[in-house]
Length: 113
Image (cartoon, rainbow, N blue to C red; front, side, top):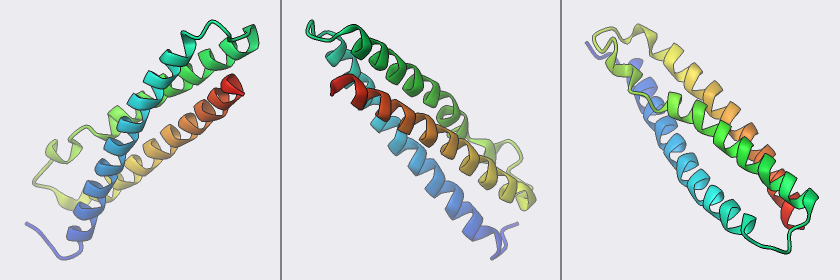
């Protein structure tokens, strides 16, 4: 049974899923860019190490994002009381992935400068 209080939670969970999809799109382009840059023969040793760390951070960022896009609302779809917990976990997972992405961006910038 839907209540008025659960509707904003459902909307917010959907918005968080959309943000996760946007982060996955960014990661796809970032990894492609890093692989292209890795093919440059002009890169020095330190730049290659920084590029390797950027790729590692970005690949690790996939894990919390993929967990956050799981359809967890469908596990107990008749009980709306746990939507608040789902929202909190999605926020935590997205922030973990954003921190990893920012670390990867910093390492990527070190690799290309």
